[in-house]
Image (cartoon, rainbow, N blue to C red; front, side, top):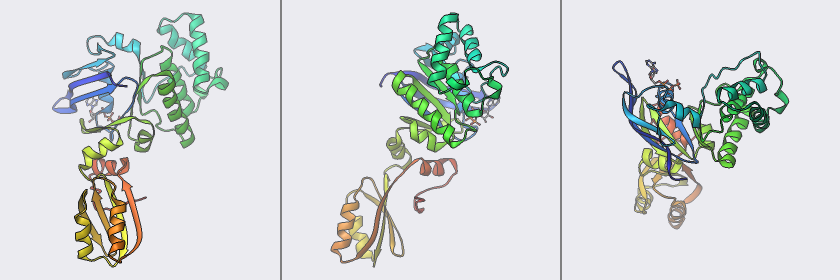
Length: 320
Ligand SMILES: Nc1ncnc2c1ncn2[C@@H]1O[C@H](COP(=O)(O)OP(=O)(O)OP(=O)(O)O)[C@@H](O)[C@H]1O
């Protein structure tokens, strides 16, 4: 999982004076699940359309599977499966017939198309609904049929725009599991856009955080926390009595402590690595009664809150 399969090089998209995407550079690696995370209007869909060659960048270049998307969108389309958030089906046709129709557009023979449609309907858990009209499918079933649809052409990459929008929790679990299976078992690279942070956190190897057309940070959870929260990787919460300035000074001298906040009998200690044991030792050695010590990692919740809602999680109590 190392060579890039999607490369965005300083791409921008301007509508009038407004940047929908603002000088974005990003490399998505072959074999990974990458999440584009951002609030409405952040520029996720616009970026995806440029990757597919469906929208031309104002500046910069996009390559998918080594092909320039802008100058060769048809070649890109051949290798990339795209599931938009509102994929339409022929409602009067069955799931099976819809897949056969897609296959005919992709030039598959009838025999191959039928084999593949049956295999994919089974793969996405829709065997029982093979002969049901698509118009009678639930939202979750439609999304699964959508996945089968993009897989008809045996793509190297699938791009999913908000794949779990409007689906109930059980349906969401099934879709996420399916995406993971397609990635792990079939080696398909997955790019998904979402503003559902918990889902992104569950299945993505790496995440890019978009706000107002710009990529604020990218990486796995640990790297994101480092980029967004700088040196404060953990907060250690301590409840002890009595807490005095002498104790605080002693803790402050420990390696890795960035800063400390005090509220009555509680301390919030911002550190760059886990030093809970050292802190506990100092407290006990000073004959102070320690009632609680707890380490909290930064997660997407804090990242989301700080960047999308304009908050600053530093100094706030954890909600877990
Ligand atoms: N065709 C267009 N003409 C003018 N402005 C546009 C056009 N398409 C998108 N925009 C603007 O570009 C910005 C980014 O939109 P985009 O749809 O890419 O965001 P998004 O992150 O996908 O949001 P959402 O989650 O709501 O789909 C928004 O401000 C939007 O209004």
